[in-house]
Image (cartoon, rainbow, N blue to C red):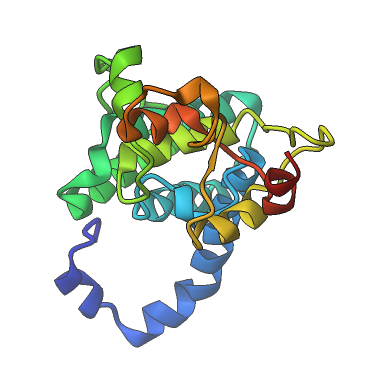
Length: 212
């Protein structure tokens, strides 16, 4: 039907649900695998969880149309992810956003049309990013964390690539690791807000953090 309101979901017939379940599940797994290749391995830092629905539909269409994920398509879907994340498009009116993006994916993959999303750049200043405190309820904060994860950060102690998922299990226990800790002389005179800035946070396993 091209709609995704709650009332539309309740109207799905049992036979349709059964028919599309495996296909949809496989497409969702592909979407998750795609994010993992970007080193976004934990849902904790996914900027807006409904984005996975749209991304899953993208891979569903890829399967249905027997399309190979080439470099051009990877670049296009990467661009979609970062634009939507930084613009905060999934922050409100989520059902409408999913509907519009799914239509854009269909037009793009089946009709060769361009993605129908705004490429207008929002103004992000370095000062504004510094002012952003670590807050996993903030889509913008989680976008910055995704950007950090996408750089495949390495452990300060052994230079191994950090397993973001394992680290974020500790983060759920409030194990946030500062580059310059609160007791460090370098942060003397700075306010708690500045010390807890997203720019002073790093991905680091608990054991490595304790040994530094």
